[in-house]
Image 1 (cartoon, rainbow, N blue to C red):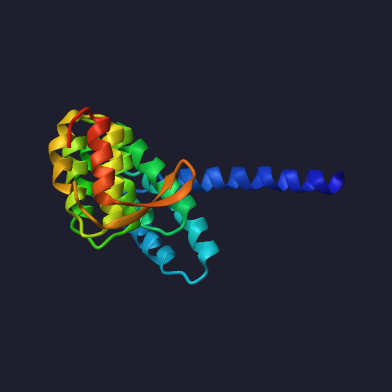
Image 2 (cartoon, rainbow, N blue to C red):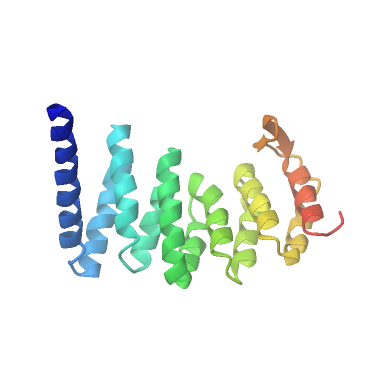
Length: 210
């Protein structure tokens, strides 16, 4: 029992030290802090040790969300563009938290991301916008439909269906008949469907015709 208690006490000590270090870090000037955190994100993404990379990125997502400014939004989107699901979950939740307080900052970050060669982030960002559910969400998500990556397009189609705005029907109609195939999670596991089929289903869900 003594050994277990020692481990528990060590955990409490580590948590106390973590909170103190975070508070001290966040007392720095936002411009200087943004530069340091942006560099830390870049370094973490380049690590060959993927476990260490994930550990750092998950912590950095929480820190970046607490610092205002476009650099931190861009850093969160960079973290979101990670192949590890756990890292993406942390980054997406952080972006939603930022968006609730500073939606325009996130929206502008999404617009910048649309011009970058990203994969995972562009699949996740439509769902961040759905969660925020702001008036501009539909128009922003619709811009993802023009991406060359079928998986990104499929994610945007499903996000528009979830958003539930019938105005999206006109955006989706151009994809009906799109034969590109994507894998999605169906009722009986993973299944392969076409982008066009997804678009037609989304149109139906929104109350439109084909």
